[in-house]
Amino acid sequence: MIGQRIKQIRQEKKLTQDELAKQLGISRQAICMWEANKRELRVSTLHRVGQLLGVSIDELLRFEKGATTKRRGDMAKKPTAKALRVDFELLAPDAKKVAVTGNFSSWDASGVSMKKIKGGVWKASVSLEPGKYEYKFIVDGQWMNDPSNNNTVKNQFGTLNSVKDVNV
Image (tube, rainbow, N blue to C red):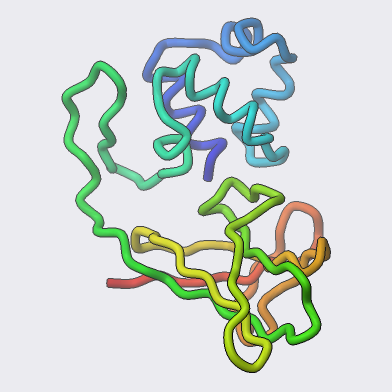
């Protein structure tokens, strides 16, 4: 999760929650909530956190125990996992605009745009490393689970997210 990754990098940089909060101009409690995965970050905030910690947003989103990532100024090894093309499809013949979003995109409200193909099916492909990914579709501004996927998990808001397992 993003919060765990922020905490890991913050601790590696020998920063306290107070120090990071002061640099960001926010409360220590906000940092604590992020690190406990009880509050989501906006993409603009995530970008500022990455800048202060010296890592890219991609690196903040990538959390695997024992994984080594290349940080600015470091000569560390890149992750060994190979990204795979993962297809998302949704039948929504009357929809005007459809996107998919999830923890792979920081739950960005604009999501990854999907294209309408034959029969009212919308499709998008995303490159993902092996792992579990939570996601939802955004259909004409309304967030919804994947009706063709029964694999779900309860989220922090008390609703469900669809889950996609990406395996080699």
